[in-house]
Length: 172
Image (cartoon, rainbow, N blue to C red; front, side, top):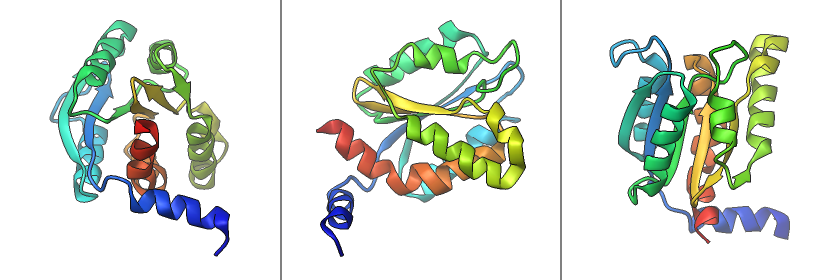
């Protein structure tokens, strides 16, 4: 094992095993009964040992999205915010702009990697996703597409494997 391999392993070894999460669904039409992506995110986080301390559905209005993000970043129980919906290119999709303006640091690799993984599954349509991640007030924020398949891909392949490590690093 090289020194480059040892550093991430050491960081992960000292990372929290369970973190507090807020799940935010952004949709003009979803209800608690029809929010399949939000439900999937909550299930996958819980299965991985994380705590969902709050779950919210808001309309695709930038002010509503920003209000919930601000509240989540002020809540000491919340270390990670996972948003789903509003990342496309329709006239109503405004999550990217709402969140982008609030980030103190960006993690461009997240969106890039998710689009690569999506491309392997759905082809060139992956370019329509404006998924992103970043940091605000030492909280990790992920904005995912509204598709349950995209949410599963993001959580299983990218977010859950690194969640404790990300929280450890942003807390330093």
